[in-house]
Image 1 (cartoon, rainbow, N blue to C red):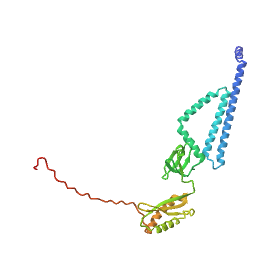
Image 2: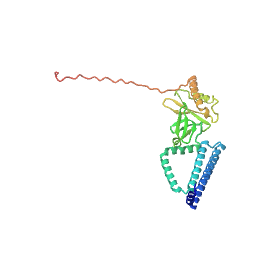
Image 3: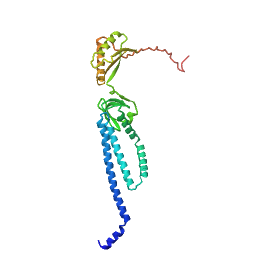
Image 4: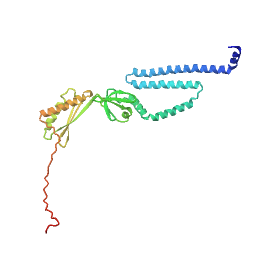
Length: 293
């Protein structure tokens, strides 16, 4: 580089340009610092929120993991806004553009967002937990997984059903596993010629014959109704929820066996057909037009 080149460089390198370069360098350094600080704060905030669920067993990991990510990206977004302001970029119009884009995306993903909101409500209020047997919407099964957008059920015959959370939250939820005990309510019909006192005694003996049946509340055996072809008894026994289905099946079989052993008849629908013979109508022969009178 000769003296003439140095003169041209010195003439180009004015004080304003030096100040502008220094300002750009300062802004770049400041932007890097802001970015690093935002990353550090977002990571720290996420860890603190996730740690809450680890500290308290009643809090759900899925919900607090989601909240931790939301806070993380919110802090990073604020950091980006500070960086843009540092370089003199107006963020008002950018915020309006992002808001409009968010509204359009929200309308397009309305169903998905409703499932997300329902998932947050399910995780927050916990109407059911993993392992519970529920009936929700038009499906029923054991809850195997709860996600933000859907819930996975497994039916009694091993079929997996993925139900959107919006369908679950918008309808009634029946949780068969929520309470530790359940009442078995059977209707037992016997023939009209059966000995009702003996039937009562047999049913009472059956109700206390199994150790899985709870003594408190006590079983209830009562005549319920006089049906079209049977006298109906109410057979109510309380049991632990874990024993309910097996005990109900065993009681049903045992009632049939004890009724057979004690000569108590169980009626079944019958139909009587009465055939009415229609009398034959005698008709006179019709004469043709050409026949004699």
